[in-house]
Image 1 (cartoon, rainbow, N blue to C red):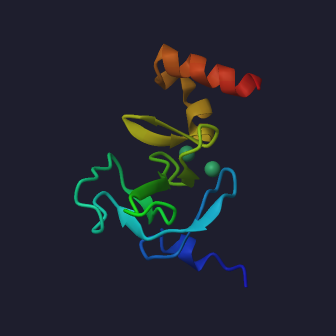
Image 2 (cartoon, protein in one colour):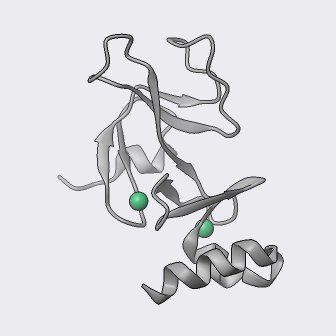
Length: 114
Ligand SMILES: [Zn+2]
Ligand SMILES: [Zn+2]
């Protein structure tokens, strides 16, 4: 069964986070801005959060979020998404590159060269 039912529900429920850019897939504990298991964390965007199983205080790790333009699910990897006032997938950044400031354009140019 490969029906991406979780994706259709826009990941509002606890399930599996799958980056549509690189294919990274992992389960997550929470989607939103304020994880109930961490009072101190403030997230700038609705994000997929998992409690770090490798630390004793299980501090939240942000896995990824949605692209604010195409709504694609993307992880935080530098080759998948970029945060500039909002989160964007790299495909949308490339398509709208002239909308971004010079430093972002240069950053992206470096990434594409590799
Ligand atoms: Zn990714
Ligand atoms: Zn996008």
